[in-house]
Amino acid sequence: MFATRRKSKSRPGFLQRLARDVAGNTAAIMAAALLPLAGFTGAALDTARLYVVKVRLQQSCDAGALAGRKMMTGTSLTEDNKTQAKIFFDNNFKSGWFKTSDVSFAASDTDDGQVKGTASVKVPVTLMSIFGAGPTTLTVTCEARKEIGDVDVMFVLDTTGSMVCNTSESSCTQTPIAVATPAGTRYYLQEKSDSKIKALRKAVMTFYDTLAAAADPNSRIRYGFVPYSSAANVGPLLPANYLVDSAEYQTRHVVGDSPSGSITTNTYNKTDKATCLAREGRSVAYPQYPATKSWMSDWQSVTSGSDKPGICTIKTQAQIPVWRYEPWTLDVSQYKTGASVLDPTRIDGTTSAWDGCVVERNTVGSATFTQGNLPPDLDIDLPPTNNATKWRPAWIDATYDRPDAAADDSTSDYWPSSSSVFRSRNVAELLKSGYYVCPKRAQRLAEMTRTQVSNYVNASDFRAIGGTYHDAGMIWGARFISPTGMFAADTDCRANRTCGRHIILMTDGAMAPNHCIYGYQGFERLEGRVMGYKPVGTCTRYNDQTYVTGLPGTLVDRHNERLQAICTQAKNKGITIWVVAYAQALTDDMRDCASSSDTAIYAPTDQKLEDAFKQIAGKIAELRISK
Image (cartoon, rainbow, N blue to C red; front, side):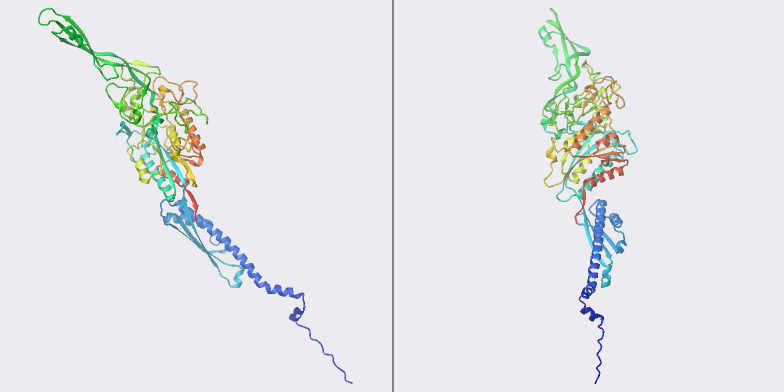
């Protein structure tokens, strides 16, 4: 009997067991999927890193391009501009951030005067490196444009006497220069070689160039100008029916005549009585005035001899007019057209022509004003419908001083007084001394070329003389740019375009009115339009005192209140007011007039003035990323 040996079974290996073990299938699948899962995770992480880096790179490129465009003043990017652009890029993208390397940025100008930039960086991978992936180079581009929509800019520019001085002087003594104009000889002050008005001309052109560089072919930029001192020259810009046909002036007119000087006697022999009496009479000085001479006859009968029938004695004596100095209504229907007309205050045939300045419409002498209840002269939108709301042409040739507010009859041609140039009635001296000033004619809003703007500020009549009345300039600047006023057609906004309106008030001095000058509010000493009181006595400046005890506010205070009433209206209409105090500290009234603290600028030097105008133009232009 044979014994048999049972064959022993071998132990299966790991893979065999795994294959037979249903539960082990899951582990196999997970193991097989581990590598691609690691790839997906690495790709997601590195993609996220690349996205974050690219966003920061794009933002930094934008910042650099914006900085370069902001610094660029012309149409070409200078090396300094490129340096500034690179600084802004570097400040926003630090080399080594996220272990990046090889960071680069380059800015250049485009054909249309904008700034483009290109930035690149090398970004290492993390998990993907186990699959052999290397660093990725990212590149972005950007472009910055300085563009504007439709912009209206109204320059209200101080052209008072101190503008002929330099910035280190609050005042200076300069020679008056005679200039021939259609209205006769006018005077301006000789400018110093480094005068403020010369710097102003340059600053205006810098403003123009800065804004022009930001304009695209579709931009519409309109400019207006109101040079001012104690008045503004706006009359020829107004429709004829905005001006009265007759108005009351502080003037004079003839009420009679009076004998003057010695008597001349002439004897005529062999003259009959009728012939003698016929020699009696008066000469005609001018159709509307009395005689300048009179003849008185005396006839004596002669009955015998060679002298019969009689002797005629004629006595001749000059006659001078008796003038009544008082408020008097004058016909200005022809005068307001600019035509040369007879001066109604003279008897020698002298003619007079209008220079374009106007006296404001009706007002009230108040220390304060309320928006919504303003007098006609302060309402920037009120249309002229009657004499109370129309303007009257300034007439210096027909304006006279007198001892006090009451009417006065006199044979004196003028009122001599050592206390006032105006009362001495020397028109040339009035003009030389700034007692009456009519600046360069204003310019309503219009599209203007660089040449036109340059011609305006460099014109022979863009000159300085006179005292500072900010309200005289601002009232017309506000009227010309108001979107709801008499000149709204000049300020229209085009459809689908942004529309900005800006007033730039530039001055080198605080308000400095004088009640003895003849300005945009007439003759304050005799009319009291601003103070509501007609002062008497000598002409003195009322800057630091009231006219009479108990009367609120000085003349300076009253004019500053008027300025604020004007500025408030403009700001309420969405007009941005920029105030530039040039070599003059910013006063509270200047700050209050400005739209905000950011739009009230102190410019102590010529260069700072130019910088201020450039800064304003840059802020008006809209800096943006276009690509």
